[in-house]
Image (cartoon, rainbow, N blue to C red; front, side, top):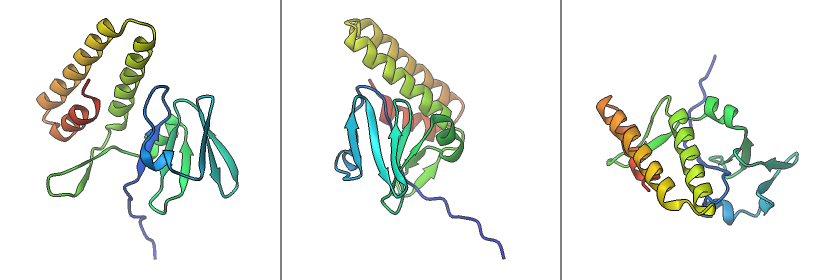
Amino acid sequence: MKYKKKPAVVDAWRNIAGEVKPEWLRKSSFASFFDGNIYVDVPKGTVVCRPGYWVVREDNGELTVHEPEEFAKTHEAVVEGADGRTYAIPGETDLVEAMLRLSDEAAKANTEGMEKSRQHGYAQAVHEIETYLRRQGRTLAADLVHRNFKP
């Protein structure tokens, strides 16, 4: 007999300079931080989460590290509905990646002293993406953008 593995909702965070690490990662005894990298202790040794890579807290509490391409293939964004259930947003990992790149650019702009003009560009990009998604009838994705990437 064959079985299909049930999908699990996991916590994930992308290692991007200037982004605040989530509490579950900051408090983990299996992760240490140095020089922009995150060193994650796994059963087979230590794995380095370089900038741009993803750290995932699996449903059993174990931390794993994923390259961006691998993460995009194996994970999809979810949003919590008003009923408390989580809903997958198929194909939106690329959108999330694009938004994180915009967020990274805004952080770089802040350190380069061009915050005002870049922030305006970032806010405009977020608004345009959200508007585009709503016109396409993709309200869950638009809500995800609005909630998580509002400048």
